[in-house]
Image (cartoon, rainbow, N blue to C red; front, side):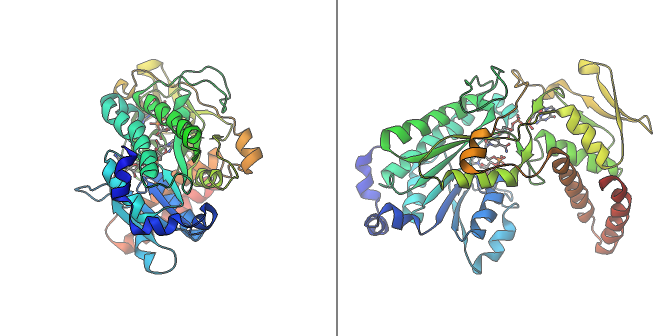
Length: 395
Ligand code: NDP
Ligand code: GDR
């Protein structure tokens, strides 16, 4: 997008705020979030509202409901700091310019993405358009509005950049080797952020975040798929869970912890790139074992490869099977991050450990399923009963 069109777009609003120094401008505390309806967007919105920001979010028009994770914040918006939503899309430059020129954000968090690695093999071009070029469009929209010195920019970079194992633990200096169209698209985004930082002196940061999960995680990501299935199994609603590569290792943390790290990056004196990770890694199989242990059951593994099954110890029922349709054409086998730089410079450290994360996700899914039962009186009975049953395994 050329800067020559900028004069047509710049509103009186912009002219007014441009007379402020960048420091005065920033005091307004206005955040703009792409991907506000996602897992991270919803937690970040809560966090920023709590800090007194006005939060603007870009949402996609959808024929079905896609604001479930932020609905509770929307209802409360008439009291105190506000959340305001705008229709938009990372594939639509003009729309991004309009939103930024209207909102005049002090911080932009670019969390919007086609974020599913397996899906990126099926929708490679679209993933590139949104995840790679979408980032460029947002950065250019800031330039078009003449706000390069005023806006601080956070880019949701990812441990998927590391891909094939070159060294562990992976840090800010580890070479990248992405293994999916998603990873490659995010690699472009990572470098365009650095290029715009250097070329236009923008305050733009990459947060290289390792996997982070929560009860709000999308249901097709492996941790949530497992927690949901274990919850269904505990209530007798499902018999077996089908998974792909259960030997893959991930550095899993809690999304809430990572949100704070994003914000901290934008509060520093100068822009930089940071890894956020726990420094621990676990296999998908370990996640399964831990999730079943939350409901007091033990899984015994038998066989190998596609024939591998997970059998429940007490009943002999097969609870886990492998379906190759979940394998990826190229896989990221091992992620293990080194968050030392963020520890030291941001004072950031994860708070929630692996066991607590798995427990929280399984319990939240059990509760959600029970609460979806129609009659409130029977919900209470089932929940009471569950709490009694679970209290022995949870303490
Ligand atoms: P989610 O998949 O939960 O959320 C993605 C968000 O992006 C949703 O709000 C979605 O909207 C929105 N979105 C998708 N396509 C577009 C588009 N074309 N234009 C505008 N918005 C769009 O992801 P997470 O919250 O888990 O992750 C947030 C970001 O962090 C993503 O960029 C992800 O790639 C990255 N990341 C995530 C990690 C993790 O472990 N969670 C780790 C490292 C990086 P809708 O609701 O309408 O689908
Ligand atoms: P990931 O997360 O690809 O790391 O990307 P996901 O939970 O999808 O997969 C993690 C690992 O589990 C293996 N796996 C399965 N995965 C899914 N989804 N479904 C299955 O049935 C299954 N069985 C085994 C996968 O092969 C993989 O090895 C997430 C996303 O949030 C990205 O946006 C983000 O950038 C990275 O984390 C860091």
